[in-house]
Image (cartoon, rainbow, N blue to C red; front, side, top):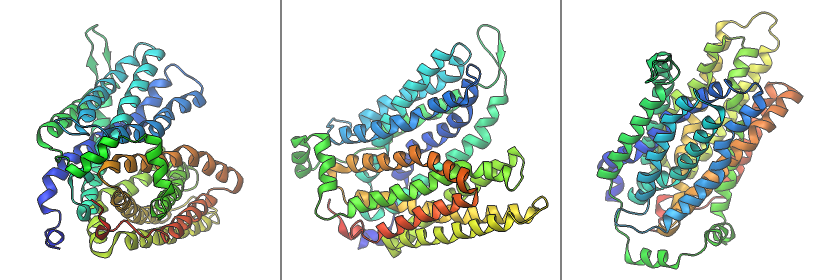
Length: 434
């Protein structure tokens, strides 16, 4: 009980250093999503092919993250079990991220090769980076620690989109004497990644393996058998939370990609203003990640997640009503329609980050030392599966029934998630298995 009273205070520095891994992803991802299509469009005039290349990261993630998360569980070295992958794959990620804009000046195939290897290394390191935190931070503090880490990821996204992106307008002179733009943000972000790797290596120490944990690791059961055991457990809490997160990510990944388009076509904003809609969710994410972890620490993770899912259903219902009322307006929508939409998305972001911050710690609570990476991997498997399938389904919903139906789509899957979370009976700090 004494440790709970102290809270995260003694782990803030460690959590911050571990969060540097998230920070690097938050820097790279928005630059990747924004500028890779621009680079590809220099060589391709078919957006379907551009879309196929852009889907490569999700396709690789669904396999690479679970595999390397599980492999790192079974790794035993003097520097730890996660660190070998971090100090190998993060620098390689930085190198290929650095090369991408320069490759775009040469040829399509060189660009695609760089994109492919970037995604191989980035997805391979993601699982070990994420699993590092529950290895080090005590079980009852993981919601708060995850809030700190998610905040760092959110701040990095803001830094990448607001500050680093501006460097793409800066001209540099190549050794050949050619002056070019659309380059500089990538090398600068790569330097951040290398610095983060150095800090992680020198200042984060993985805990020593306990004797009983070492015996578990020596068994080295096949990966597929270990994953099968998760789903075949008599107590189905792990299965139900995974199905629940699949549903809420289907809702989220169905709605967010179309928010900008909705802003332009329905609210009639400019293209530049349209990005602020999703930005409302990101701002709420960065502000409320830590408070949501504190709230769950006091009130319980399951109760906090179910309350947040219920409130998300309410907010999405209000957005759907907002859209239906807007469809009755014959003139161009006024500012009040836009601001109220942003306010509702900000509320959505508050409850969404509360769900995300506390669901990972619940799943980790169901793991032991030997399976922490496996549970991390299956979390990403289900979330990435949603990212692959949901945008297509949501787009079809819009085509058939119009934009208000998009939010009904989200309501249905968030409600499913709420129902499934009711069947989860483990995942609180008092369920510690370690």
